Image (cartoon, rainbow, N blue to C red; front, side, top):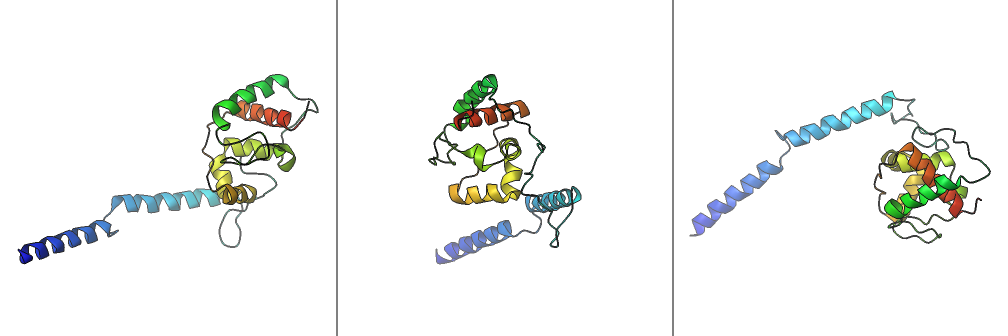
Amino acid sequence: MKKMILICSLAFSSAVFFACNGSGNKENDTATTDTSTATTSATDTGTTTANGNPSYDPNRGEGKFHDVKLSDKLDPHEAEEGQKIYELKCSSCHKLTDERLVGPGWKGVTQRHKPEWIMNFVTNTDDMLDKDPKAQAMLEICMVRMPNQNLTDDQAREILEFMRKNDGVK
């Protein structure tokens, strides 16, 4: 009986060892390939710093919005549409006050961040959290990554208008 337990234990240990060993594991090889591809494409898209990482302009944000023009007056239709999006996709994590829920409160957000930054963040959340110092600082405080909400450019603008309304723009 002791020999049988010893043989079974040895067989199980061997199976665990070989299963956990990285050699011959296609999933491991794929992950390595994907990482090197991502690194290559990231460095090919812009200038690089001394350590080989892509440079980052924290004033620009990471995304397609570079020069968002705001009117002194609020667009009430866009703000209304933005409120609907907020209620559907944002309110479970963000309050309209300065109080943090899961994510930071929205009060004063348009004074703390440029419109380009806000629109890039809500449409390109993952890249911003990976590269933007402000977004990374918020992540350290909140400890939860904001999920990508798959907002269109128009929806991002509507959210921005609703944020402006929340901050008192009339």
